[in-house]
Image (cartoon, rainbow, N blue to C red):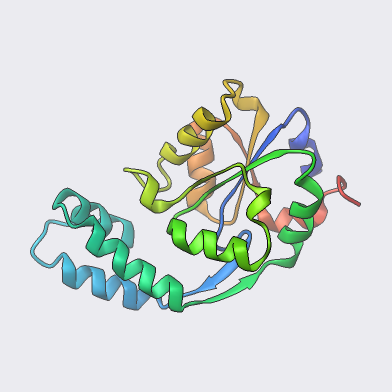
Amino acid sequence: MTDPSLLFVRKSILVWDFDGTLADLTVDWNEVKRELFALAEDLEVEGPWLNATVEALRRAGRIRDAFSVIERHERQGTLTAIPISLDFLKWSAERYRQAIFSDNLRSTIHSALERFELTHAFEHIVAKDDVEHFKPAPDGLRAIQQHMDEDDLSRFLMIGNSAKDEQAAGAFGIDFLHVRDLGRLRLHR
């Protein structure tokens, strides 16, 4: 198996996912879906997925309603830091420019970063409520690239925990590291 540390060669920008990567956010997503489906019952939804329902509500001009439901549930959820990610983040904060690209809402991410005393660690955050197309679309990565003013995509590395994270990185043309591989790194030891 290849040493994941090799992915960091020539990297200058780390883009982190939030939920499942930096923190575990426990939310009753089935209840969120149920409430969103109820809001969208009069709309044509392109699939049974949460993001498809939010997209339909956006097209109908009711995105604020969708985000209100999600925000209420994310706020009520249980948030737990992922220790290996936070340890690595403390090491990497002085060495890399860092950003977050998340399918969670901005208010949730900011609240967590304040709680974990990490607001200083990230130069830019792109959340669900900042993009028109959600993961796995790479819109958020494009916004981060523009903010960071870096044209060389080989300088970016996405760290995440899901197929959507990996697909977004692939669609944008940047490398991807699964968060479970942070423990195998030989960079910060």
